[in-house]
Length: 460
Image (cartoon, rainbow, N blue to C red; front, side, top):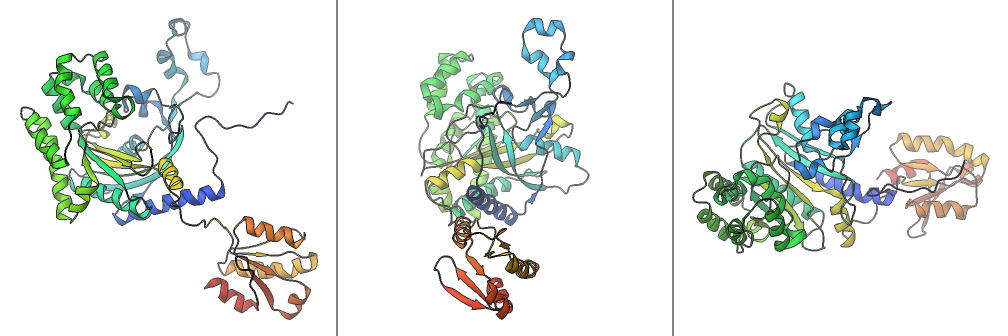
């Protein structure tokens, strides 16, 4: 059989032990913050029923869902008429009933509905798992990537939104970031804008276009809006809103004037004001002034958002958003559970990793799995050290014995490559005397210890 050159699927990556150490630093930091705010962890399957996912992310999002082919002869169910039409949208549901999850929010909504009689409301959960999107791979964007989500369902209080601002700020500061913005908007404001233009039925078209402002610029947004049915008169009303500048409070004041005739738009403005009021009451005036920013162009293209929406960007590295989220008042209704509001945010772990790597913000590697390596000189001393190896492990100390008696230089190189801090030298004399030579790899210093002293030293 001809050999196959190994390769990775586009948009995916392998992670070395050093990289996993860094990734776990991010995950563990986030877990600590999430738990501090009263959230508990759950997990859901990597794939869901296709019908669970479709129709939840809008037209753009549905195109990026990875479908899984049915097992067996899946083409048998495709009729000649289906093939003749050459429309994959018609026959895909026939050959694919499952799909890799696109995000963690929709599976979470499905979880809540299925377990509604087992969970306590409001239900606060966090979830750190991979998701998949058939997107075009580029820097900071992968087809397989981790999301770190934190959500609460069953509570309409805007205190939740205020606490998410704090969670973002605390977690990113703990990770070492100093200059970032937490952008805030409200889908009701966007609904109000569509309403005053006279195009409420084109809300989704408007938000999809506006959401691309950073990527394609104002001219590109206007071009797309025209293609989606907006007139020059509509654009003349929209453009000043899109270009709105000033402080957050100045933007809020301006939107009160713009949306005065839209009840839903004014409700969105009041909700943002309530979030700001909560943050002030919690002593976060500085955070509001320097970090939180009202951005009327923030749209978050996912259809299920209905209230406040978030997006986080770092100013220290050129990178897309490293987090985002918002309120979704009717997501569980799609699964039969009505009137259950929810709100959540997500951290983009892969992008955060790239940012921390570029800024050299990861702590010194702690990737060593073992505290000590026992050198292997020969079969006789190997037999003598095996009981010691087991006793050290029983004492909770991570230690390994080099598996074969090779040159000491090779064993030392192994310990150095794995960042193992100590090497125990047990030769014939050490076995007889019961005192072992412990070498500190970083300094080269050696000390002689019996088993009790060794246990005390390594366990301290």
